[in-house]
Length: 262
Image (cartoon, rainbow, N blue to C red):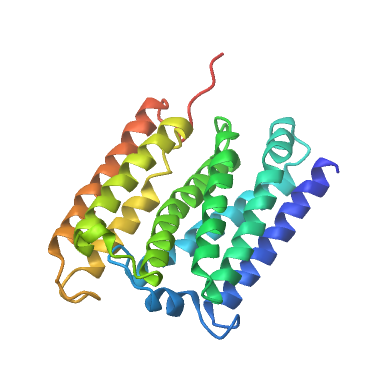
């Protein structure tokens, strides 16, 4: 398959993924939207509904990135990028679609495995990105970095929803204690992923998600201020995610990705 064909296959799979996501969001798959299913298995670390608007930003950036690859497919650097990321991108699209279907049918255990495969695939893809040299390449780094970062918190929330479905007792620990532990462990795991990928955009969606968790725990939120420790822990860790993003950006030489050695 030549580079141009791969670029168009990437676009086709992305548009199909977007279509399935839209159908799922409006409840055309099994009669339940993702939000309705999520509300059925509400966890203490589920961000506020408004937080999920980030999908619009991520998918818009991905669309721009894929258009850029189609337009610039003859350029050596872009052709190399297309050949490098196409297979993991295809896998990410397939796992995304299957996740939407499984989650809509409330197969939460299966959806947890699928979203885990999804986030790992995106991490592999991000690991293949090179230092962005032009505006289009910068959009690539930003789009896939945000995509991967958001999927980290989505995976954690999905796994937590599965535990809620199983009515897990948390080994006797209170639910709010486990929520705080999960927030901290997620920070540590993200730190390890960031150490490997060094994409400055990676932790920004997590900061946004943690802000959404804080919103959900305010008096006007879903939990009406019952678990204030969770909300404030989310704010503190969210601030740390922003600091990490800034630190990585500076360490990368004021670039989203590490600069390549001459």
